[in-house]
Image (cartoon, rainbow, N blue to C red; front, side, top):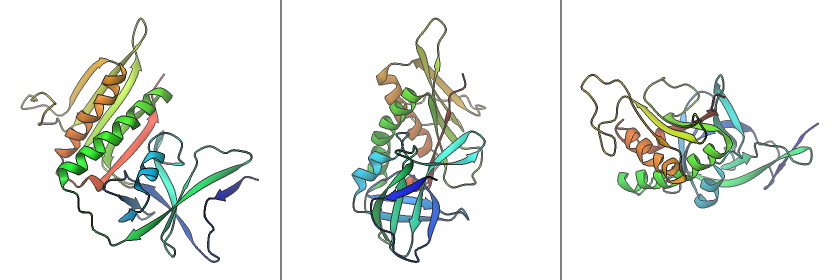
Length: 228
């Protein structure tokens, strides 16, 4: 039997609920419960939590066939988030704990939040390309519409190497995306997959999401395997 080792003790009688996790921005992250209800929490260890997320090492929940989002365990009584490893070690799974605070309001302006998301996402996209995953930004939660979305993917190129592509729907209307045709439903850009191109895709994805007129904390990050 596999065991779960926590980095902090769980109080007797505590109830852990599975939650989906959004990006950490301005020290806050959104968590979605099983009823698809989001709540915003502040963490005192934002840099450590942000570094754990999006790199392929955190537990995932399947939200659609072959599509996954990172998930944790929330103890509401102690306001503690446990972030389990994706892979077992020595017959068990380790989970890192992060104390949370509810009700605190973020202070950063929208431009600062989008800039922070771009910086974090560049690392996420590079790590995803290395392990053969694609990344999609969509509305968060367990249930969400097929559009809008912003996708980054690297696929093998004929003759060797790889091609990095970004796709977004609806077609973005702000730079650095080129102006779309009046009847364009979506937009796609591709280039040889150098490290700078892969990381630079974060600029295009965040620009597309900013066009949706939503809060950055409503965004979910979806992962899937690049088709072979």
